[in-house]
Length: 234
Length: 234
DNA sequence: CGCAAGATTGAGGTCGTTCAAATAAAGTGG
DNA sequence: CCACTTTATTTGAACGACCTCAATCTTGCG
Image 1: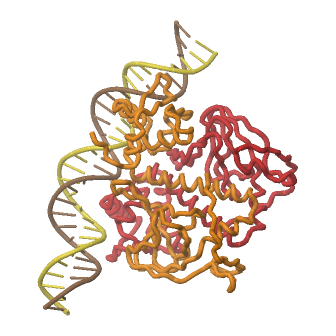
Image 2 (image 1 turned 45 degrees about the vertical axis):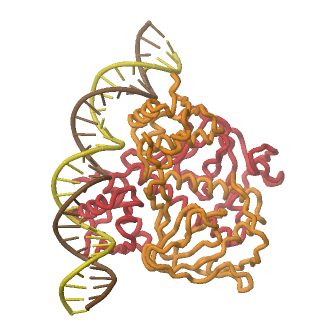
Image 3 (image 1 turned 30 degrees about the vertical axis):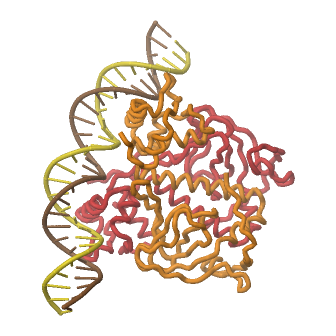
């Protein structure tokens, strides 16, 4: 689930904190975690989705936005970060969102390799908890993109693929939850859920057996395109 | 930010697992983390929002939904949890979401007190990182409720109050970001953002100085009601 | 079989969007 | 400092996706 993040012998030091602003500001002289101040102009990128997460940042002045995109350009701004906030901390190899300045902004950069290193000393128990929390965060972010940007049909396609993936990618997807639950999950009404499923069936992307709690995926590629916001060619 | 969570010597039994499901099943014999299997009927509640988070759970069979509500009953189902998933892990004193079974479901309960205990031994650095991640998760969940349930006016009210809170609750809120950013954050179009702000001004809940990047909150109570989904009495 | 709950389908309404234009603000160069 | 261009924001009118309300159909279960 979580991929191990091994820092290859990065010369890194231990931090010995005890600051009022939080430990981040107080690394030991000999083992600095923190780095330089960085100034960003309006709309300048701090870090990109997919880029190596070598640093994370604390906002000093100005503000940042983090966002994700659909293929056709629709954008979901996950959050804004104001002075004092910490951004880019995901304990993963890659950043999952793009961060940009909304105006003239100053941040302090911290090396983040120390996190995996530090937690390597931790109990397996703590690590698994952190991994589970990160998993929740990633799912939540995926869902922000869905709720903020996608149409009803795209939402349903996304949902079906997600359920399928979590059930070992079988073509037959079991939906243990009711239409009401699905609707409240996707920010739709049950009637719209029903109509969207019917429409996907009409388009031959899925098939619905008599048992309404089971759905067969007939055309994953097309469903994937729908879910990713690529306009359907039809 | 994070309050310490001390477990008072609860008599608890050790599990000796060695399941393929991850470390949770394999805590040290002397420091057992896990507990009993629990069976839930359809729609039965596993844990409630606000309740003490004494346990967290791993789904064995069936499925769970987690959700949050607005005052008038609108519901956002944050996520579904299928066999193998871990739920209720927030490293906080209280659960932030309600978890219920979507059908006949079996879970394994784990004591979660050990997390704070275990992390007490961790470096301040790791704890701050975990705290920042949890902060992100909470914000994301709040935002799911906003995107999934709220009307345009409610979204704007929520956004203004949130920005105000993060800027020391001043009545004058600075909005460093553009209307486009706000729109993409709230799942709206810039025109709708603009219209909603105008409408709030018309209702005397806010005031907009000439400088469009600044907004004065005139009636926080009414804004709060709007944000919480309490129908406006007017 | 008969009933209750859930799911689907249909018709009409609404909120937010789209497209377009007006207004305001912020630069730019003279 | 001012005319001019560019960009951001606000406002208006018409459209459309999804919602609401209501009826029908299906399924599960006593």
